[in-house]
Image 1 (cartoon, rainbow, N blue to C red):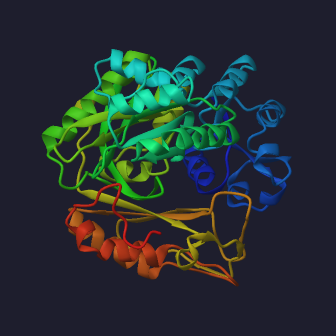
Image 2 (tube, rainbow, N blue to C red):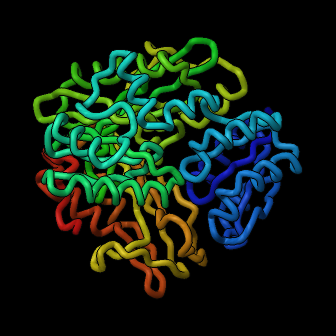
Image 3 (cartoon, rainbow, N blue to C red):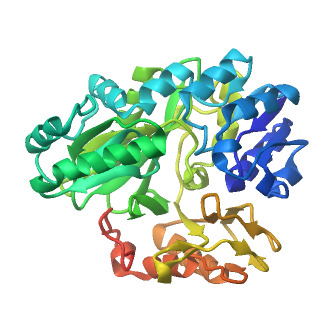
Length: 446
């Protein structure tokens, strides 16, 4: 492997490019016409404009990405997260054209990308599942029957869904049919696949996920858990590790379950197994993300492992550089996702020209961003502007460090607002500080 094409944009493209540089790999960046001056193009050896601003005609255009890789002589494609990162057809296209896809093979991607087959595979591996359906719901009658069997409340989800999209929570039996039809329509629109399934919805739950790494030589390790319970409309805002308030014995069992699940399906690369933890300490499998996660830096901070480096080395056929006994997490880390949105107006995105952008600094403060003064925040893509990641010897010190970092963060321009101030109010809330928050808790989220 000598040359890697990064099939993405924004902060994750910059982050992947830096690790490629450290490994001595040449970088090929792709961009839309709207992103010609993006930060990753300044780090790349070669840049290819692959299409108009609309994502479906550029970053989601698999043929254009493959062509860019072939014309630049790239050996491998790193998909980042989002866009084509979990598209099994794209993985097959890479394989067919002699390109190494940095991630699991298409067969594994297809099995885990389909939430129904993923649940069935994890059930066969002995992982606990919430009551619900293993097969997609056939019709409204099937939805009504399944909801009654699972017990209310229930959540109806898109089989091909992800990223917190394509789901509806139902508390009243009278609403099942409408929710089924709405979710089915949304799934078809968002993912081109209208199939949906149903499972019991756990109130007062914690969202806990486990980072795994696996190679093609039988190596498979976990790097501990992350708590992602601070969410707005199923979208994560703050992530941290270790999960506050959960016993080490419980998180250890969850981590072991993730490794068991990864081994059962022959997983390769970096992946995240997501679980829901109820108030009684029971846990159940939710889904697998077959890619690097937005929140991966908190794991890197406590484990001292470059996850993208491991991804690239595994894709090149090498063994993992660590064994399970080498994983010794230290301290606590927190990540805040800062979006160009206005909390006072229902978190409406605020694109525009950044006239000032000042990132915080100091000991154990990391900023992953593609923004800079003079950068124009586009309206057609995700509004994520920066990720602030801090490490501390314990959680209180990490919270204090993050509070300082948020206070130092500056991103201004005509009409531009960010969520930095709102995130600070979450950190100051006694519920968060005491580690009592759940996925249903978020002050003033609307």
